[in-house]
Length: 426
Image (cartoon, rainbow, N blue to C red; front, side, top):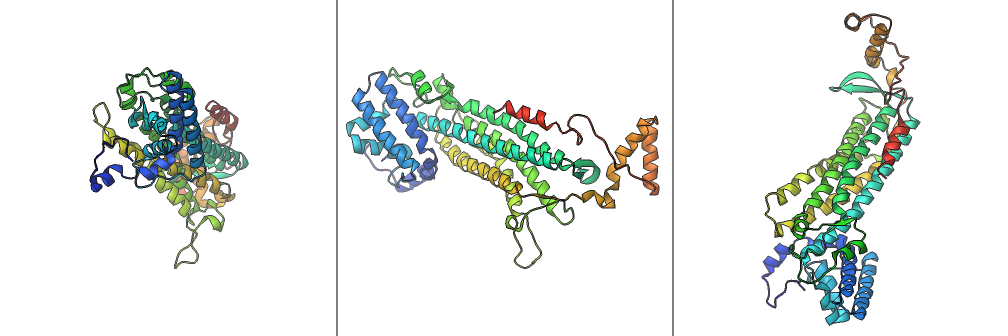
């Protein structure tokens, strides 16, 4: 069944090419098409395009379809183009002419739009919840290991003392910035496009405020052409939000890969979280973190992929827009998987508490030792030259009892303030 069927057949090659992967992807979206269809049916009843009995019958059958989706028994066979045609077929099969009325005053264009908006709202909330869970874990780890010093690097050269408290809480606070983008994407998604029909509205006296409230949207996309132009844009906004989280996760995964190597030996994980080599029995490879890094790097390319599909399209609907679905849906699944596995793994991280006992890290303390000279009254530039000369001559003696007290330093992590900042997002 095809919603645009005019009674004559379509060449099989054309059918396969135009449908693409929609059936599989629509299994993620079918729940939301049912939600939107129920709101639409109720609205048609409110404006007397459906009788009360017809409305009740449609809601009953849509609820049954929704239950089959929740129970994972809903399928979209090859004889159907997508979720819309399968759902409408089931309604007609059960209700006859009443089922045929569900498509009154809407188009598949705004059906896809509203299902995607509802789907993205739910998925963005899930991503937000998973990111918050990771944030909380990082804050807890920062508190637990705040006294353990860690070498800081610039240009991959030993630089200044850091700490595991600083390292963990740096990624925690970075996630707050990332969630600002997620919030922005949610605001874009939280606008009801249903009622824009094929992109130019309807001559039926529909009530878009009714469906907006029924589906718990904060607002509607008022202009029907603007609603249609939102196709691809809402996905791109979501992709930008995910790309920011992905950048943070990728950087942390890279740190972990370095820190796990024998050359660093800063952290380790239980054997169950690492993999071995087919020929080298000593290996404990960070495959989990390498895959997080790779997947998150792919996720950072998603906004550009979407741009390449939707860029320079004129207003109105174009079949190109179908392709955004096959980009954004798998990307969301990858984003959630990366958040889940990183949170799972970090719960088992083991910290090396004696890293700085190695004399190669003595130079970490050169700046703090220099600062002590400045505090004793020596001008900074003179103290800098003195310290440089001692290092050159091999007479440098590091001052290891460092004290960093300003906000955000290793001696004053401001974890409560960072948590308070996160609370403004929740």
